[in-house]
View (tube, rainbow, N blue to C red):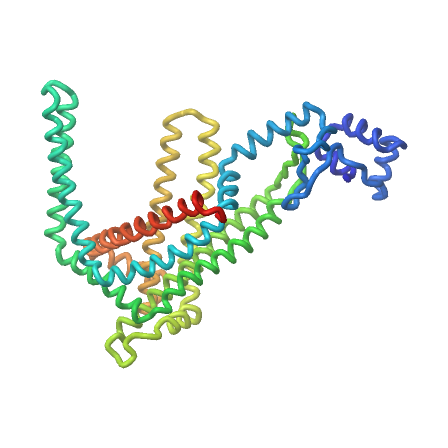
Length: 444
């Protein structure tokens, strides 16, 4: 059952008059007057609907749809096929809704496997790193030799002969450079390995640190759910208007400038609060590690540092974390707005130069965000270590990284190797388990 206001949002005036006259014997003018006064009765819609997620969808798969005209049915079918079913986000959501049990199980098993891998790093982390470095060096030497041998399969005047030979020289050059880096930074590599082993030792003394990422994950989910609810209400603000023909029976919300500002503000708050939650997690871990480092040889053995780190974070350094999160949120908001307009511009122009510049600018903004996150994370460590405000901590962190760039570089490289092994192993095991569950287990 519907009223006149609903019809006016979808149909032209002539169609509304014909439709009302069909169901209301006193005529359209009488029904219009009673509708303005708020006393008009509801009239039946032109086809039956069923409620789904707060929307009324037409029952096209039943005999009740026979009231639909053929043209209207084909138009709606075309609209549904071209917009909803072809939309990538819709297919992603449908896949998630279908496989949510498998995703939930994989989320739990990935956490368990990640914690087990940390203890594995403590035991054989050095072996993993040295074997990886040796494998990279051997791969570079072997790859260059393979290209050089393959170049002999072609005549000297053939382009492939020259290209493969040059490729071999380039690969050997990279291998030589990599070997020089290993020889010059041998101490830095050993320091990096020792840092990751010490990290595993710290975790063994403070098992409660396992709960910090998990609690952070839950808080981010709760915040995202609350933000989505408020965003939906803001998104629905506006003037409901009919779309252009032949889709005039689908409503579209027209925003004004105030609504757009509200949406931008909500996006900024989404990024800010999320960055603050993640920043508090990073600060608590860094602060706990600092306390443990200075107390590991005391009577306590460096245990019980997580609780004090949480207390220090919320009592003394919440503002510093919030300031760093605001810097990250501003950068993320700029990236989001740029990506929105970049897609609009790329859809409107075919100029290759413009597209290239847009992609290049997008990459620079991505790199800027990564740099800001890296500096901010190290600034939190400086705040926990020296008890200074955020700006000074960020400068100290930047200066420390600049003075010890080779050590930080190898430390990040070693971290990348260990993380890469862990990510690949955990992802492979979870993907294989998910495949077996989806294809072999009926319950999933």
